[in-house]
Length: 244
Image: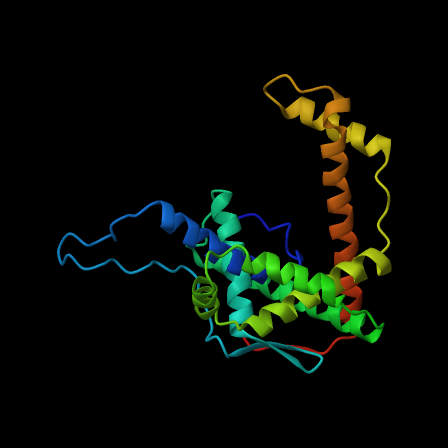
């Protein structure tokens, strides 16, 4: 069984899917490999998928009347699966796959209730910043054709990816201005450092060297906890219908 993931409410994991396609394109351009074939037939072995994914245009969840489609869910679920793989964990068993499903839905619902509240409060993305981020995304591909191929693979249009970038900016503004995050104390940093020293087999660096990293980690955790609390508050008054 895999552990419950701590990145359940990381915003906009689906944007990473397009970046992953760019990474695959770069890897393919530097290293050519023969396709894997079966010993008996010599045919190319099919890719092994461990998650049951909905159709791209299938409605998976409705939040306050807004539909979220399968292609968005699939991008998030795949990214969560990839993150687990990097951690050496698999979703090959039913229980683990169900956990990925639960967490993917949590990401989607959490993002949506935050964005809906942000829209109600009048938050908007800056056009210049959106264009800058869109150009950065395009710059990960060598050609426009490669970009279009990646979009086709994910099922998104460039207009939809621009919308996701806008929503990400709104999300970031909302979290920065609407969510109160407790400050990290020196005592918390000391406690975290002491725990690291106790569990480390090698000699730990001095506290002053590790302090910035520890502080950043604790700030990230406190922010995530505060966002989680806000999401749970918003969900209490939300109309959520899971179709998956």
